[in-house]
Image 1 (cartoon, rainbow, N blue to C red):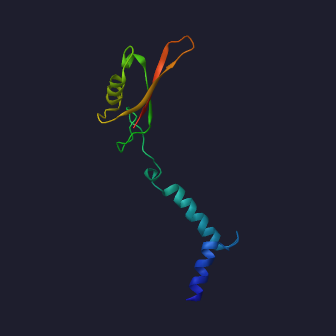
Image 2 (cartoon, rainbow, N blue to C red):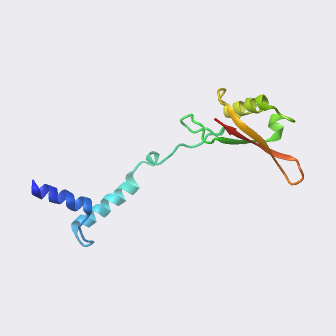
Image 3 (cartoon, rainbow, N blue to C red):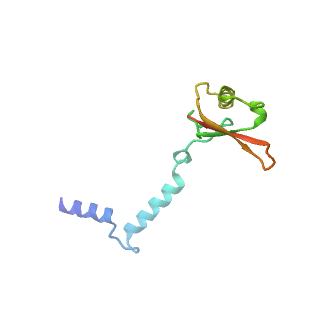
Length: 115
């Protein structure tokens, strides 16, 4: 049993040199893992056209909406309806929103924080 524990300890602490067969086996295992691992294991979820992950969760907590989309002088309900329409999720709530203006005072976009 002591021999097995010594081998496990050697593997965990990696006491093998670069010219040993154990090192070569580890390198082959690493290369095999890199090239044979399915790509889906590393995907974090792609965004669809509405800014939603494939799993349906929101990808961001902040949206930017063009003023043409919300109309002139939108109120809180108009902003919330606009966010729900863009995301396709009727239950979303708006925490806060603000108009971002260009240098000449025109509204460029509305920055909306969502829950």
